[in-house]
Length: 250
Image 1: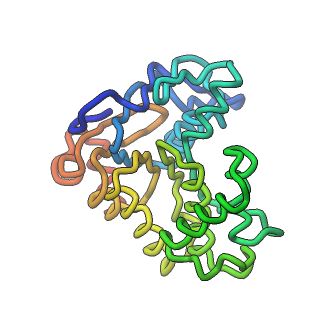
Image 2: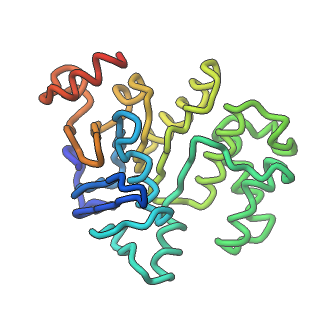
């Protein structure tokens, strides 16, 4: 995948295949890499395999064959490796998946205490810093159903960041939001990109892709149709299928 970053890739994938029981080929000979600090945006039609690829990266979806290595750790059958990768790879989903019976602060604290083995005091300090970072510290004592969708998604981002991940995956993080709430979540994501967070984002927000991405990948039917810089992708795509897709959404 990467073009303009230096150093070794933090994510390497090689010849990934994934077929679902219904016969759908979600990933077909999918290969590439992502460098540290790089922002890669993946776009494509529904059913292209975009979300499946993200879920494979942190072991939520099993691959049929191929290899995934993240920060030198192979995602294989070893439980220790899988646990380590899940610590290092944060993921934000379309749905917020917050625990409804817990306050915002407790939602962000939970994994830090259980997985990172922090004291409650240490976790709370980190959580409040991150809630402030995503501009929602004033809601620390609120419960999820007292928040808007955009606020809940910002809490979900803070929760993922609390694990101090080396990579952040965003799976259409704004698609479940009302239009007026999309901007507040995209602003948080843009700030993370500017701070150098390694990010792989599946999104339909073309303005975000154009502004923030180092590279854009267009997928269809489990394969990479085209990839390149945002400038290349939006100004002069090489593939007719890419041009058709862009003409339909821009």
